[in-house]
Image (tube, rainbow, N blue to C red; front, side, top):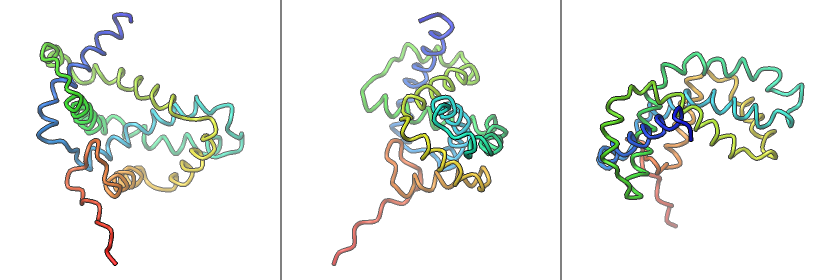
Length: 188
């Protein structure tokens, strides 16, 4: 691993460790931070999808006709959504780290010296790669259809809808703060 990648990777690992105690106390994310994460991640996911599925998409499909216009609303709001997305990421990773029992106090000082903006390109690259790896070629047309169904909605509504679905499904890792627990099955 070269030095340009190693430093942000180590800093990100330190961030995860430094937030472990906080995650154990909070262990949930604000719905607004989840919405910000959707706004922030959508252009990254869109780019990963576009690259991964380029050979499988129709030249007259949604991506060719209106995909870029749809995603532009997210790109315009991406910078403003970064703080909320970063809070969610820290909570998620710290909780995951705490659950697995990994703590590296020596890295805490390193993260304190780095501005969060220095981690952003690393996060973008890592998230984009992870998303691209998860996209199965046979899913490309379904993902395109889903994007087309979302496209008439304003950016904030897409983010809010996805956050609402996460609340409804009783997301556990991380839990949504203030989300109502899933209702118990009705007894007959």
